[in-house]
Length: 585
Image (cartoon, rainbow, N blue to C red; front, side, top):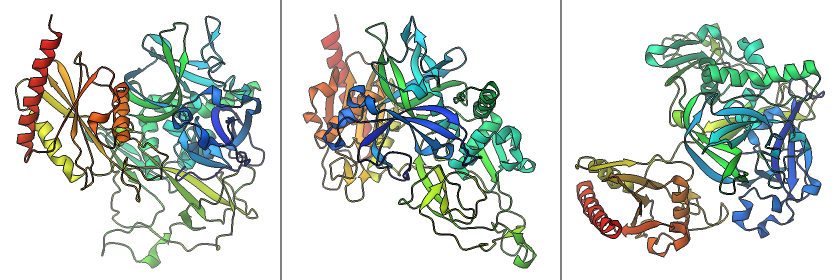
């Protein structure tokens, strides 16, 4: 997958392997600072995965897997940011595909009343909550922990592996994984933060932290949340506490943690559907979390970095000959994809540190936010030259170390916020018209917040192939989508606009459910897939995509937002009149 380096411990046998679960945390005698995490993997039955239908590949189907060869490998915990259940690997390389159906849970309550901790092998009425017939997490995962969240009246309606909570909310980078699994938050906080430059400014809803040099700006948001949320502190420190407790008791250590917040959230995840005792009810096994809208306990973040060489204002800074060296040692360079991570040898401290940036948009509350970096009155440090030339390496390690003989380099995985592309100018009329609708009596309208399911037109072919879903196939530029919800007389209407090429003459889609309810995001995603299949022609969308949804489409013929909104009102009022004539007793 783009940006993710190879991992040597995965098989290199030309077969495709799926990550099915996380097992125990174990000490690594070869890398004392970095423990290893058991990873349960299973090969696909079909040697050539391209022969499998894409819709089956995207699922977590047990029928596709060869469980006779399910096995467990051990990988350094610093590589956890590159791994998730449902990821697919071939010859040690992560593939584009991810298993699981993308699902969005709206207004999901996270609290002690709605969630509980279970073993993955827990039973309900003497039946496994995760039926072995539908999902096999392996012997290594038998005693692993998961969080069960009440959903649709089912206390086990949503099941999330505990390791996934840590991967998604806390260990978002190699350096943060080191902090979480080493216990530094409790036992060596000074190595993480300069507490002299760390405080709260509640009147501005601002947190100020003194971030040590090795941590990225994105790490700063996570650390500030951990410091300022009791739930986040508990979840971040529980991992190492559980490891210590297991060591004292002489048992295998499994990851323990919890959500970094309490309250409501919109949660997007890739899921596997599991049956229940009730044939009409299904529950969701979360393979990987995608996005969470829960609020951070602050709105603004200021980061002070000590021992850096950011210069003060011109004319006010100290001369370089009066400054201390900011840092020495090898260079920091972009990661090279040809070098795999491995977990058997420590890195050479004189090797260049190779950084792999993994794009993410996982936390809705900080989407698009920039942290503040105050200008110094005077800078105390200057750049120091490299102590030794970087050594040549062909493999990487995510561990910390002081080795000087190894030919292994230092690798770091960082989560970097992937900024949403600016809306095209063609959307301006649409946006202003929707806003203008709120000026009319009886109408309320709002642009729907985009998410992974509705931000772009879905692809109909593997990523990288030429297809209509791309605005520019050569540049792999996705067509953006804009969705508006309009409410009139307790009836919801949904308008859908998508980005077009100059040669396109596509129409705006108008959708309405006969009972007037708001159309859910997963259903809209299916309709957008129909749009992609029919190359933007709404009238050609297959009936199975629409179900009980009425579809209409409008030409782009309005010179101003005012004309647009008036035309929409006229059309919707006419549609309402027809609706009541059809459904009135």
